[in-house]
Length: 215
Image (tube, rainbow, N blue to C red):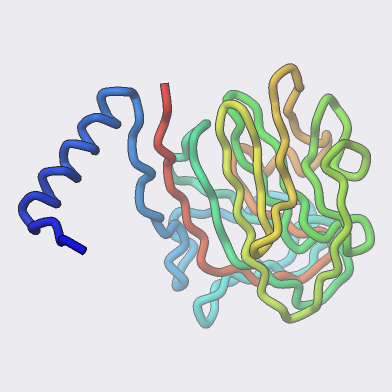
């Protein structure tokens, strides 16, 4: 097979990049860590009543069980659309959600619930006023204590998607639907936060990246 000369290869690559840009396509950005594994820089403890004592130790952000919610809010710049969030989470102790990931969707916010309502429920709160236990996203998955799960959320104008490890858990087409928060104390997680319910959790590898946008 005939090889393309190195110089010609880079010329072709540059031309393709320019062509994509001319048609409104931008490349996805690199992942940016938003938790340094050492401090709460860029985060603040959510002022839930009865929350556990949040700590950073051995590279982990720990959210001890509270009565009822424990959580943190991201204080950095946060996009409202065309982005992805990823983190590793584990349930250390407890039997309810160990990752309630709240994130912006345009001018609204919503929460990806992982391990709720007795420990196995996964879903999005809320769609048209219905929370994760009673809308089209309701699923059930077994979660092992002490096991790390990679959680990723992808936000675009047409969809909200989410994965746990390699399994897609959300694929929500949002046209004509009202995206919002479950009412109550969890609303304090807006616009971007992570919470647990009567459950001790550990978090690591929290990253954010903007996505390329097609016009």
